[in-house]
Length: 404
Image (cartoon, rainbow, N blue to C red):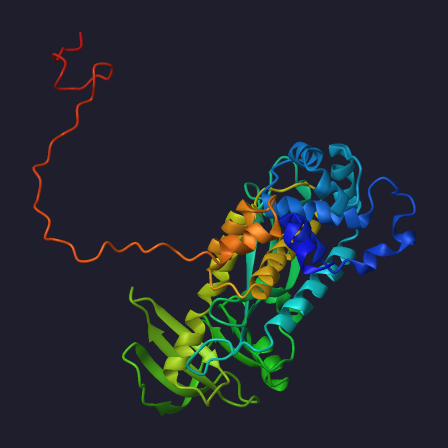
């Protein structure tokens, strides 16, 4: 397709065409699903995430309204019952494979990014988020008598201060702890792993040291440490910086204790002796990035609005939501946009059913000058209460009556 054709194409169709769906073209995959192929199903649900389609009826209405979108997805007509049934039947392994391909594309596009400044580099942040489910519809997901939900264990890649994406997720029941997922989430690499106190244990620390995995992890008070050597702190917030041991048989690690602006204490263990205490403090503070990421996908991709109450349908939605996020980030990187993720996504949503050319024009539009130049010193005006009119009642406008 030439450049002029792309400029005239509907933006949502161009976004969906970026999906690496080559593996879904196998005829044997849809032998019995001739009405709605796996490829069409995946594209439909990614479009639903991008445009906040709130229900199966909403999906049906949107697809009926835009023939060009139906052509890109590869369907002539669709029903809500088809969508409801197929999302629960779709093998999660296929959606996971598509997610991995999107991550590989993001990895290529962010290859030149250097991570966080001040020598911190590229990071991997580990954490999980809980998704609440209807208590009366999801008996299989009960955590307690009053709590029902599942978890999405996430590994977040920090490629730069403005570019972050999940490069691995593992769905689980709400009963699985962060500690139990650490073997799957933390793999040998050149990146520094940042994590909260749910992950470190003596066993995990020994394993990470044996594999030479760089880590910066918050630890609980229950982990006993023996001080081997004290270092002089170089930052006012750092209370203690020392070489310590948590077991006799393993090499020593570094312990940094600091206090934040609200006087909360953080106890950090790391095997990075080459960094300053301030850098270690900044590395752990970067962990807040994953909390903002969870908040972003739940608010802007409506991740808390579930399409299914069955395990497979919910796992599929997790991967599809992050595929949609990855797709917007691919478009952002390809257009070299300097907008924040929320500004870019808001503009993308606004122009989804317009042409790519109009979106590009809006993206490159310069902001109007807001300054009015040098201003005179304002003369304070006397504050006057506005009139409430003749319809509304006011306390001082009515005669006070005693209740009998």
